[in-house]
Length: 225
Image (cartoon, rainbow, N blue to C red; front, side, top):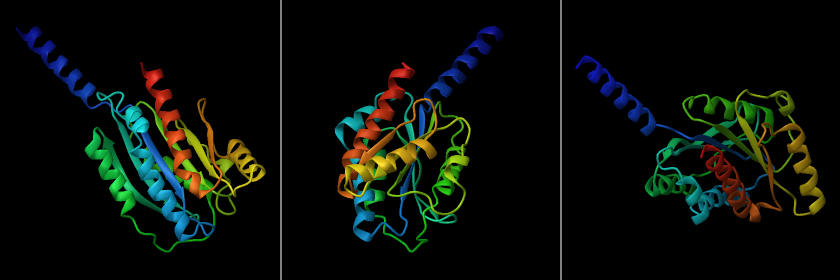
């Protein structure tokens, strides 16, 4: 009887752990430095909200309901200028996802630093991910429209055990986008599956974010299975 009781307790604990599983912690950092004007700020926040609600992105997010994704969003500019827009949220259904999108759409810009500190943005994102140690995989996304010009050099900020992807927002020319993507590939991203997605400009941010989210979430679903 004691053995059976112990086995039942062990089974219930295993089920509880399985039900609480988190397959990925995903932190998204958005560039709000001085090169980003008010209209471009809205294109980022509203574009991210729309990308999260894209049917194919929702399909990827909800592909493993027994192990949902945890999501957080923050904005960054100078070395001491980071602000959490969406605290850690378990995206376990359409209601939770709609809440994240509504929060982004309802966020207003506040004053901040004008400089671009990608290294500090990476450090802040890594600190957020450290709050989710139980997730199977930890991914940081850094979006930006320029190179770092202050704070720790991004190539020297390499937090352990996380993947860092990038989304570069170019000036509208192929050469400009390619140069910025090359910078991110050399100094910002890290991890075996890391990649850089590109938007020709802020007007293309939403489409680029859809491509990026589909890619990183689909990779995880396939590998987990």
